[in-house]
Length: 338
Image 1 (cartoon, rainbow, N blue to C red):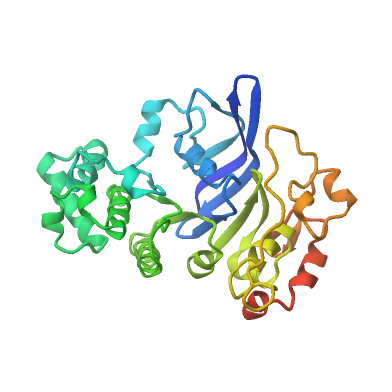
Image 2 (image 1 turned 180 degrees about the horizontal axis):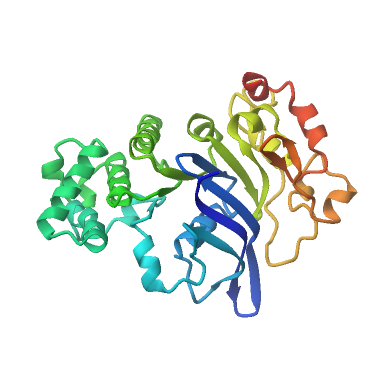
C-alpha cells in the first residue's frame, strides 16, 4: 500500500508533577495515498492528541512521547528538530483546527494569513503570495475573493471562516490534510457544504485526509476507512462499510445505538452510553471499555485483548465480537448497510 504517513506503536503521556496521564497507548495506523481515514470516538479518547502528535504541536513542557514512530516518506517526525518540523507543517501536512474563530488571528487580514505559509514554504514574493491566496479563496468557493483578502475574521460567517482555514491548510498543496472536527458549531446545511468541499478538494488535488470526528453520520458519508478509539487505544478499525455492517466491539455498538433514529431504543428516545470514560492516570490491564460494556465477561478486564481480523482488513480488539454482532444484527443501522 502506498502510504502518506505511518504511525507505529505511538504512546504518549502528559505529566503534571508526579502525576502521569497515559493519553495514547500503542496506537498504530497508516493513511494511504488518496484515502480518507476517520478517527472516531467521544471527547477525551485521544483523537485530537493523535493529530497534534503527528504535527509535532504538543506542549513540550508537559507532553512526552514514550514510544513509537510517525514516519512520512521515510522520515521519522518524532524527535525531529523544530526547524525541520516547520518545513513539514503547513507544507507537506496541513491542518484544519476545530474552532476557526480562535485559530485565525483577529488582527491580521484573511489574505495575509493565507499568504504567510506560501511565502515561508514556497519563497514567493508578497504579490505572488497574495495572488496564491486569492486563488485559494476561489478554490474553497468564497465569493468575491479579491475583496475578501482584506477582510478580518470577525467580518466573515462561521462557514466562511472554516473555508478560510481550509484554504490556509491547502495553500502549499500538502500530501495530507488533517481535519479536526471541521464542522463543529456549524449548522447542518453549512456542515454538508464543508464536507462536500473537502471531498471535492481531495479528489481534485489528490491528497489524503485524516478526518477526526465523533459524528458517525459524517464518517458514513465521507470516509473510506475508520478507526474507533477509546481511552487512547484503537478498539476497532476497517473499511467503513464493513464496520457499519458488522460492528464487532462493544464500544462501536454503543456509538451506533446512540445515533438518533438508527439505534435500538424505543421510538422517540435516545440511547445513551452508561458510565464514564476511565481515568487515564492509572494502568488499565484489560479492555478499558469493559466497565461500561453490556457484553463484558470477567476475562475482558484481565488482560488487553488482541485485535485479530474479523474480515479482510477489519480488526476488533474484543473477545466478545461475535456476541456484539449478534446483538446488533437486526438494528436499523446495521440492516441498512448489509
